[in-house]
Length: 460
Image (cartoon, rainbow, N blue to C red; front, side):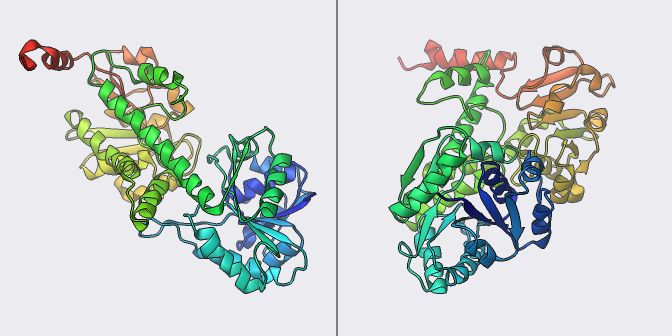
């Protein structure tokens, strides 16, 4: 039975995985090039901010330690999980520069080890990376043979920032690409011991697993974009309500309700780049990926579409407030954030823009620089705003009342992408409420459909 594992890379995912493994009784050695991260782990503290990470580490200090030495980790564990950055390059592919360096260090350590060791890549890569990009490095540096002296697997996780540990311990399924049966058996055994639920393990070749990983995110983003498209259509249909439509769609088991909300574009460190990578892969293989490419293009156009949509409300002297700068609620991460993209687009269009996020103000300020004024509270934004745009469904924003808005006689325009606010606000004379995916009471909307179906508009 495997009792000792190592985790190479102690970022948000790596540190969280290490803590989760330890919480389930495994002895874990974490490895990182950052001495501060190593020291914090050894002090029983979290090296990065993530929900419950500090708690899991402090409660399992007897089973988790960290080191700067790959050799220490490899010689004192049986399976290594490698979770290092694989950043996108200029072509949209995933760079192996950090993974290659880690595998070189692992290979050197394997050369000094007599027993079998399994190396499991968790970072997102394109098909062929494990077998043709990384496996040869291990064989060269170790002088050993994959499949005989050491194992190779590819097993990415499907997690969300802010809930990594929960998602890791209770996954929908585990994905396992294996070089051979022996290496796959070891990893599946670890998962069966660690996972709290009875999640199925989907085992396959390395290349099939690598393709599956990016395909999952590409499919989810397509679903998000489809819901956003339906949201736009609902705004032009009398009585249109995207929540009514998507709720019914989600009842169909072929579709399901998850990620079928209809709001604003997707963002974050994974979703946007995986669509781009799938398009790149298709071009390399001399195939086409029009769905992924169109999904990416549609999502990137959303900020400019919104700028055009609210032009009738903007003008000289108006202040626009963007509430929500992280890519999702309760997160510090602003990478590919819809709120940041929208704030930037509004400012570039000549508007005075203020913004606020409960957690991401500092990181957003670094992205937006002096183009947008980042304020310390939601109240400060609302005190100044003539137009308010709510871009994340943060619980703080749900509590907004009519009394919170600027009181100067003219109604404040509120664009609520997530339809968070109360009926009090929607019905107030002091607020002109616009809910994304909700039709306004507009005679032109009705007239357009009447004309579409009038006998004069149809061929005789």
